[in-house]
Amino acid sequence: MKSLRLGELLIEVGYITESQLTEALAYQKKNPSKLIGAILVELKFIKETQLVNTLAQKMEIKVADVDRMTIDIEAVQLIPKQLAEKYGILGVKQNGSILTIVTNDPLDFYALEDIRQTTEKTLDIQISELQPLRKAIQYYYSEITARKAMQTANQTPFMETGKLFSESMVITDAETSDAPTIRLIDSLIQRAYTLQASDIHIEPFEDETVVRLRVDGVMMDYMNLQKSLHPSLIARIKIMANLDITEKRLPQDGHFRTRLDKEDLNLRVSMIPTVFGEKTVMRLLAKNAKIDHSGQFGMNDYAYKQFLPMLDFPNGIVYITGPTGSGKSTTLYMVLEHLAQRNVNISTIEDPVEKNIKGINQTQTNLMAGLTFEKGLRALLRQDPDIIMVGETRDTETASISVRAAITGHVVFSTLHTNNATSSIVRLRDMGVENYLIANSLVGLVAQRLMRKNCMNCREEVEVTPSERVWLPEDIHKTYRSRGCPSCKNTGFAGRVAVHEVVSVDKELRGMIARNAPMDEVDAYARNVQGMKTLLEQGIDLLRKGIIPYEEMLKLIYYV
Image 1: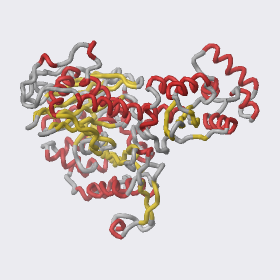
Image 2: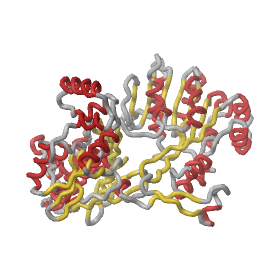
Image 3: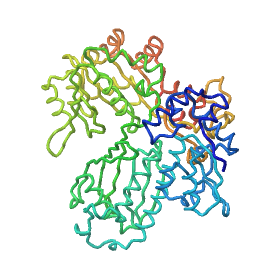
């Protein structure tokens, strides 16, 4: 391969000037670990796309789209993980003695030579942008690690099912980190993280233990393990979560933290006894999870504009409503992080504390110790709070105290399980809260749902069927549906987007609540006067734009 200097190439095609190259080289002297190409991009002298295309053209190599291409897992395994991560090189295809690789730096001769000698293959080189390549390397090697860990664990002889499991079998010594059980759990968490799963389910059955992951709100089977492995697996998780390994008759909750890809990951652990053993669910709570419209609390422009004034009220209560898994807690945490920037005292009572926020006093309920939402909230009111967050309003006592706290000069945020925004009023009435208290305390109501998004790489237009026409406006003749591709792991979906139904409780609405007006009247006022967009209307907007398929929009018709 002819030796090429990247800077000279970029000057030749007119992307940078000599003075910019000189500045970049001076920067590299102070940061010798950084490549000149990455420095030029960092200094915004050139876009990475321009860099990649220039190298591809001059070296006559192909530009690879790792998100869309089909990658051979056997080709990936030909390159050891440590070398792939060190050089940023991914094997994607093998054909006899030829190995197709993708790299971000095809000028790194020493890296290419190392890969060539390690694999003993002739290299067919392709180039890719750095971030998608790193993501692909992490994704495929976590899959390989998980497969190997599963195979090792399933091939390891464990105590036969039905025999007494001894505490002495539990692996606790740090020196035994290579034990099959530990490797399996570590690889499972890593894999769930790369798949952006929200939960890991470990479910014991009569003949086997099934591991399932919840990705984008949907359960997917991931691996099957030998039944005799289950006690050791559960015991290890109990140790990590600081739970009682001898207790198998009662439910237990705990948590632990780990660090993956330079990101702190909090895992909430819940265990419950079943007929065939203890079922475990681990919820992954990443601090830096990607959220659409994160600068607007995950809300679109309409919802954000309606919601933002609610944060400026000196007192009152705001309810975020929706079913389990609709992102209510995530929204509340984003709001609290925003409010924590003010000079205020913020306290929370939660079950459990899912995310630690700097500058906020967070308390977790403890039923065994007698610390309920009700008692915790009463105690918080004696802590001179400005803002209170109640994780969930579950009973009459909690609702009553929250409402009275809002009336007496506190800002309160909480969640409810209701179908839409205005039905929260009915829910509070059912809990025994008087109409005048609801009217005087409520500031706003926000109903929230999460919709799975189409994969943009494989979505295609489809004609609207007669059965679909029932719920769609006349102007929609075509929708989008994703067929599945390597980018979305053949699911057809890539991430989720939130929709919000926002109602601001103004003077007129307070009067309606106080006189116990019919809910149809309240809904009509919110829609016709305040301009509230319903969940279904926003779902149809997303459908029209091709962001979600019809099946996702259909979930919202039950909330109209």
